[in-house]
Amino acid sequence: MKRSVLFLCASLLGAHILAAQSFQAFFSNQTLRVDYYHTGAKGQESFALEQCYAEGEWAGSTTQLVDRLNRGEYQARVFEVATATLIYSRGFSTMFNEWQTTGEASTRSRTFHESVLMPMPKNKVQFTICRRDKQMNFREVFSVVIDPNDPTQINRSKRAPKYKATALMQNGPPATKVDIVILGDGYAEPDLPKLRKDAQHFNEVMFATSPFKERKSDFNVWLIEVISPESGIPKPDQNIWKQSALGTIYNTFGSARYVLTTANKALRDATGQVPYEVVNILINDNRYGGGGIYNQYNTTFATSDQPGVEWQRDYVYVHEFGHSFAGLGDEYYSSQVSYEEFYSKDIEPWEPNVTALLDKENLKWKALMAAGTPLPTPWEKAEYDSLATVRAKLDRLAPDYYAKREPLIKRQDEILRKTKYAGKVGAFEGSGYEARGLYRPAADCRMFSLSLVDFDPVCRAAIEQVIDSYTK
Image (cartoon, rainbow, N blue to C red; front, side):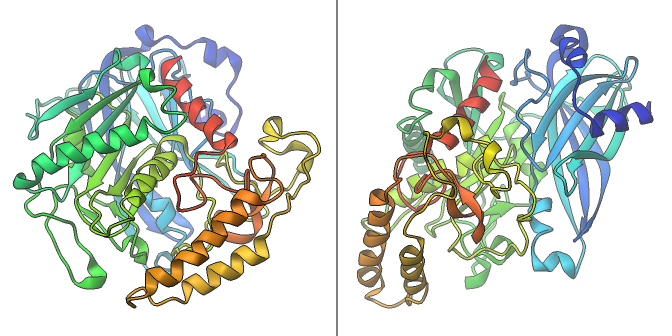
């Protein structure tokens, strides 16, 4: 059995396996949450199963059980033991694999708590996790047998919901819709009216943005009113410490604006009371920030006390959703990040909107390009970068900071709007935190600039593919 699983993790999925899928044959309409510990340092990792939990109704598709999107650093795969049949798979990324690209990972080991959701199997299964190797092929890194009929393996206790859950938008049964759950962190009990208002606001922002606007009927949205002991979340660089229910924190990986949480169990316990596939966390704090990890969750700062820039929180909400929902990569490259080697430039990234342009004849988004578009696609990069350098040197605490920044931003925006190939799909150098050697599909996109510009055609297509995977 072990040999069969290893072979399948290293090979393409055969059509006979896909055809063998049947939800009713292999699963019951319930969710199995597999919790495990993920430990390691730079270049090494190990896994240890912590606990399996039986949760509520299965929210995912009952027809598209095997993941065909080929996204994520990892992929969970589930095989029925009796027949060695692949019955479920799903790609995802983790906080752990991001941390491995930071300098800290070269000096110490860390452990992260993680979860994978899957439909409840009827019979014994082999649960495996595969990770991409340097050639982007999935290789098995963890495997464990789970027997749903063994009363000692799955915690089936009825964990009473701690927080009020409200349906913000309902368009049909979970199995045929994308199911979003919105939670708040850093909202104390007196802040709950603000949480309700914030959730409604961001939900309206999402579905005023294409392609979500056109696909609104394919979504359900829940709000869970998580109550934190205090208002706000920690900002370690300012020595501000708060107790929040979901453990979100600024300064993740040393980046002031990056907001993630290591309190995975608290997060999953809170979300488990409703059917969901996508987790959006609203942060009751006023520092610009957020984060998003593919098929995990995203975060967005929800309070803006600076007149004229309230729109930035709307930008962050949709931008981070692009990461967590569709696996879109960051297309910007001039902002500070803590990653040291996030991409290998001699390997094509898995993200659908970032390319190393190693094979111009087979560019991953070739079908969306107009004939005659040059590769690489020229744009006024030198001037754009010189303006970014001047912006980076401005003193953010100076009273004239915004006055000095505004003309720089205005000119950068003008470059993106008026460059010769604006609005066309090509391969524009500068993407994935790298000024050279990585390329994005368009001059501008919601994944590139800090603006309310739409997703470019490549990102939009990638988002629609994910929507289809849950609803078709």
